[in-house]
Image (cartoon, rainbow, N blue to C red; front, side, top):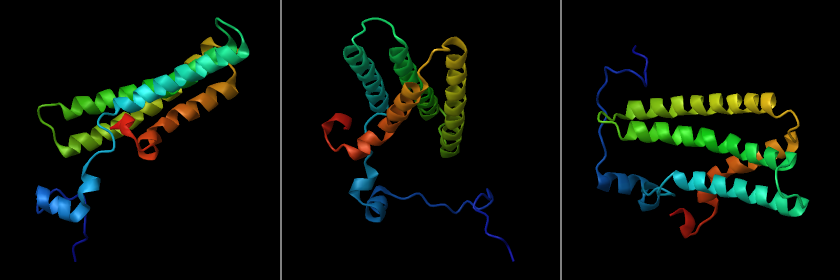
Amino acid sequence: MKANNLYNDDEKDVKALSRAEALALFGQERLHPKIKSPWVVVNAQIILTGALCLLVTVFKGQLGVNNLGISIFFGGILGVIPTIAFILLVELVKRSVSFKPQLFVRAMIYGEFIKVTLTITIILLVIQYFPNLNWLAFLITYIIVVQCYWLPWVVKNKIFK
């Protein structure tokens, strides 16, 4: 008795769906992406980081560099830079001459690895070069900025279309 192996390359009986079959199976709504470009999420992360830095500057009453502002800035950077690296890698694979779904899945996995590695690297650099960092502000800003991934699915308006 042969075991059913999902990853067996010998079985090539996969049939691609036509557009009509895909529409019948999934429906019109599921075939359209929620956002046109992942850069919309990066823009939202950058705007949110800037707005948080500006709010702290206004309410703290200190113009110029302060530990709280730097902490919020680096918390935002901690979310933005790995996202940009991930998007660049995936876009590079999508635009390659020999695009294959296997390469795309591999790029997604490598992209996540790069995101985690960059996140850890940025945290270590911040620890080394900014010892007076406000860790609570740093981590809260990072958590808020990372939540921008959910905005296109939560906010239903023309901003993300």
